[in-house]
Length: 467
Image (cartoon, rainbow, N blue to C red; front, top):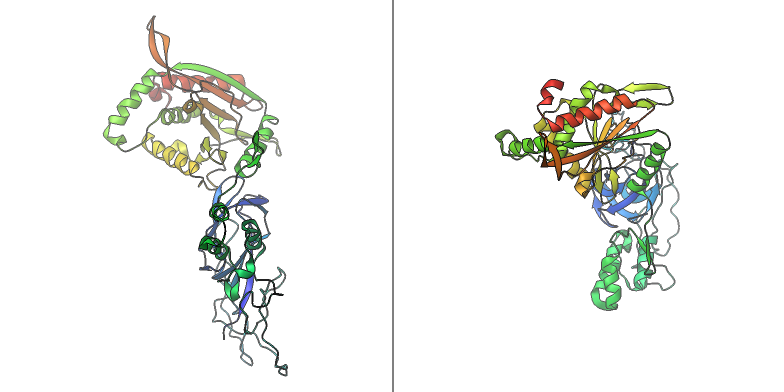
């Protein structure tokens, strides 16, 4: 006979030094059977949305937190009923175990623990006199405390269906009881389909869907799993909790603005030659199927200009009182997402050809807008670009991404009357805005870099002279 035990899974540290995460969605429900490393939830850290794989194979007995809840690292979020293979058969000697293989976590800071390489063994038990017969009783869920290494073996006993004794409280979890209260459901009338008759959220929703309650309650049941990002306060205002990516971004921007002395310079450029080059490239065979935009050319111009002005590809190390200059470029691209502003970066962007850069930019922005950027994508940037032109804005004063010395804002491309060959002509014009940390970048360095970017966009042939 196989015994079972209850194991809790606590929210892991996802490797970013963060103290909390928000439960975005559950991919499983109470009563579901899951396999090892099956994705059970999506959680949002202060930087990204990541998937949590299951550390156990077993049956879900409880979901301790609801979607939209911010949970501290180390708190239980889900419980499993798993097979108890920790003990030895009575009187049998435990076989020697081989050295454990190295654990390879499938998520930063978290992975399933390899407990043994030998066959399952049973723990020796002391024989005791049989207890006098007792009436069958309903089993209760067993909770394992963090300090315990194994749960006691519990022999199965006969159970009563939920609701057979009016004095008994139907077996369910706090979230399920709250859902039942919200929907006006009497749990005494609900048949549980979970382990040992546990009432699940689906049981409550199915009960409502059976038509026993008013239509309003049935509509509420259909909507209760939808994420609620804002709480209405009357009809005149809406309050949205500050958490996740937006909370992290706000703290980072405040720290950057009041730590690094920002200087912003502006340069308006006739980018007609660059736009004409862009149109020709789109029609050429090497770029067939690739997404080319003005951002592609601006990004390439930034990478070329950094070769002549490496001082902008650096950071200020306050702790060691050093200026750290990078010999590689992790090019950050600010991306507006439904969860807030993120700045994922392209690793070693200086090594990419224009074709490869266009592919990398498309993948980076698509991943960011889908909320799937990994913590690695969002860390380690050395210089950034923000494209405010897509919103029809000409110029701005961008705030530095923490740990970087410069950020370039590219404005909208507009047809504007412009001096061209001693005459006034209608040209395509863009304004560039460069913010930099004046502690390590002086005005001359910033001005030369901005002038080089502008020269490359005004005359792409200058790339040969600067390469």
